[in-house]
Length: 194
Image 1 (cartoon, rainbow, N blue to C red):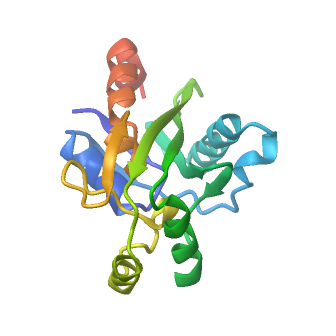
Image 2 (cartoon, one colour):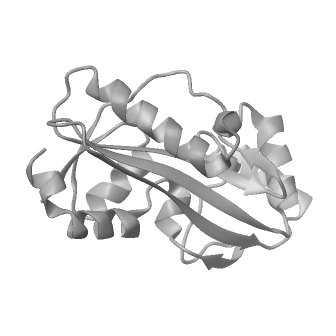
């Protein structure tokens, strides 16, 4: 079983990784993240933030293979992270209603033994049906929007609002599991020598 140090306090990321068979220790980075467009390019910015998180955790003396990630929604040129309040969540849900959008996750795997790291950015395309005002308000009342990128938690494969998905459903939740498995199978020593 591969042991990962997850540079996050996200219960959803932890649950995904545990269900996929990884041994997970959560060590949140707790840093002020730059805006993902700080480097000009969204994908490069997300990778940069993931690297910052991994290095921050490594500097605390944690030893092993660190996985860090940063996820945002991208809707018609606007970037959605986690909503700050109900009004912000409403704005995000209105923007996604009836349109296709992307969820991007920049990721970094950092082996603390020698500082070797691998990075990437995964994209998942999602199409949501239009929400009625009553549906949107009921969802906001539920509180499910809290601490979720784009204010929405995907319930794949039986999601009542998502009508199409191209790419990794796990990526939408914040961990591109398929890419992680591919990288670890191509570079098995990465985890063994951590």
